Image (cartoon, rainbow over all chains, first blue to last red; front, side, top):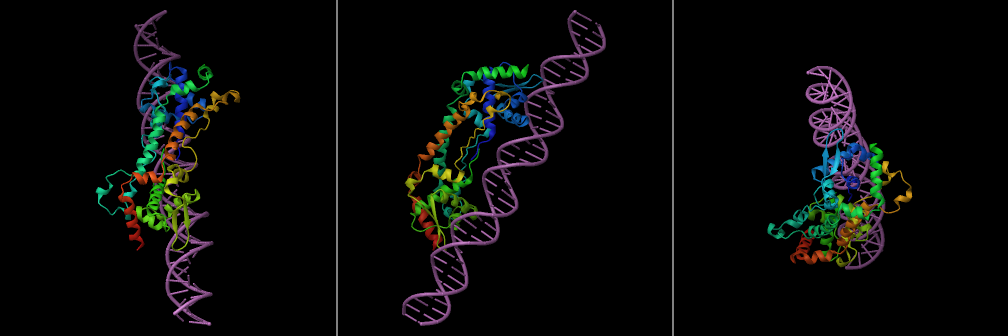
Length: 159
Length: 159
DNA sequence: GACAACCTACTCGGATAAGCTTTGTCCGAGTCTGATTGG
DNA sequence: CCAATCAGACTCGGACAAAGCTTATCCGAGTAGGTTGTC
């Protein structure tokens, strides 16, 4: 099982936007240069965040991306769901109802699959933990220099 | 993010072996027929469970697979780790240390990446939940007919 | 000098190709079972 | 009738291809700002 890199990219970009305070939008080109990422592909991921309502995009020559709401209101679950999709990692395909073992009335399978239930329980714990942490929490746990560092970087690449 | 089907297959096969009581080994062919799965590929997955010490394989004409230890001692975490691999889903590639933003002394990055820490916390919750449930728990939560159903199936395909 | 129209450059956004993991398949080595043959 | 031997078939196990998803790239539509010409 493997999570796409887009999640890491998206989170770091959101953090950068949060540290900058959200006054003026930041373009994909600047964000890509900041982390040495492929620009076009990063843009694709940021679009996903826009569709999810986490970022807002403004076109034009001074356009770019901004946080749609304050960092306290953006959970890690939001970002992960926006980029990785809403589907569960474990997908029950109901193999218990196929093959030799399933020559039984459908009524027998009214009870949900125990395997799926157990896996879902673990995944809910994962989601709950993700939903319990916001961007602001990560910012608070970061060294205090981080905000200043982001701002000085932005002024350097803007000037 | 997507978990391979092998996890579902492995869990259902382990449950079948558990319900049968583990007297005589069950071949891949029978297990594959039970759930209508590709036989050779299922075998590949069961081999992974053998390497992890969850199953034992006996070759020969009456060979097959058996649980290596009682169901109370096999957690979902064991099965998932055996099939999906031991790596974390989220892999921090330290993009914060690359690009424009990282023209700083390495000393600045001694503190672990906050994003990675947060993601790891969620993943630990997931793993903890998986490790807290055993095959025996799933068996206990299943309808009591399940054991009898497995045995009758085994006698039908063996006879 | 001020205003308005135009043009340019830069932005997002979606449609279009490579790389890699997952899935699927095949064949070979090993082993137990059962029959066969000799005593 | 019994035991040893031999052939056979079935098992696991790892090496070998195809498919799907992730990653990466390109080009078009749209917008803001700067420029220029006119009043």
